[in-house]
Length: 493
Image (tube, rainbow, N blue to C red):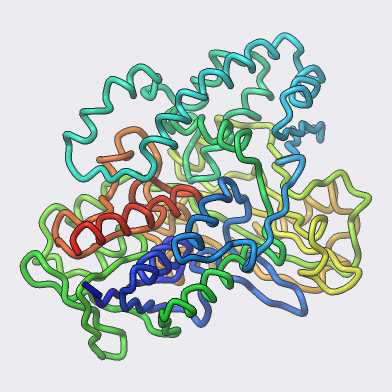
């Protein structure tokens, strides 16, 4: 039976779910708070530059193919994916680099430059992560964990795969060189986790990249948003912008619609929230109508770090620099800096950075002769009590000075476009609880059944997609949450 479905938010999870549900013939309408789609994938357009606001690392591209295939289309007719090599260029605090891609022999050569004896350990590491990948991604990523018994069934596998260890502990069993341990353990940061706390299940990210590559969408990640929006429109979907949802209307075990900030009410048979899980419950639903999803639960959940991100364009190219498309610049401290960010909640004097240079692959997203960048620094979420109204500009200056002195000569004299965001943006604009950039932290006791469920425990027709629900953050996780929501909703048709 055709259903009226409201989707709150047009991030990747919301758009993917909306397209899948519209392909089944449902009447789907998206309500988006901002003036454009994308959520964390929002695109900033400044002085002829296009800056992808959020995710830039595309893995498992077949998951996008599947969305179009479900609608009888071909992804290739909407968006082009370009393979990247190296996947990342990782610098230590002295500026020495390590590249890696999907070629084992190339990786062994890179390991040789640091610690040849770690080649055998790396081979063993990759072989063991195959089992983690097959269980954690292939088998479980698109399966809902709605009941405790779902978790108990896989408990023996989790023990066998050493999921009680952190990613850093797991990697350290095989790799002895300190820098190489950092190289092969940083991946949890891509999904909001501390490598020293995140369950070793997330070691599969490295294997996933080896298996399916790292890709770039021509035109930037925003081009994927545009492609999904075009598909959604072709399927009869509707989207409203500048329409902030102030309340999800509920009675008993059913939600019946939404109330917008302007007071208007819109009814639906099903609601899918792509808003942050904590914000969905704490900010949008009357606490008297909730049972399991209490304010207390979310206030005591552990959340990911936040981010400070600077988007900038230069009037000159930097093709003679040592930079690749994706660059990770590690500071001298590793565990200490991560402790400051995740545990002590301190804004440290030092930092580690992710530097994105997409124009090295696709010059079309900047004016002729110009270069486009974004640089990201992990910082504590808003529990740290940092006054970002006061600290944002000095922190920005420290990062830009560092880049100019070490990687991008004469940077500040060549900047012709710039914008930055801080934890206040994640809270105030993206509705992220505590300004956490990736929602719920991916520790073992907040994974699978322990995460906010894809179908609400409180309401039979409310579903959650996005980083805060199962299976978690990162594009593969977010797209998997849309598959789960689609299956659960269609099962009840």
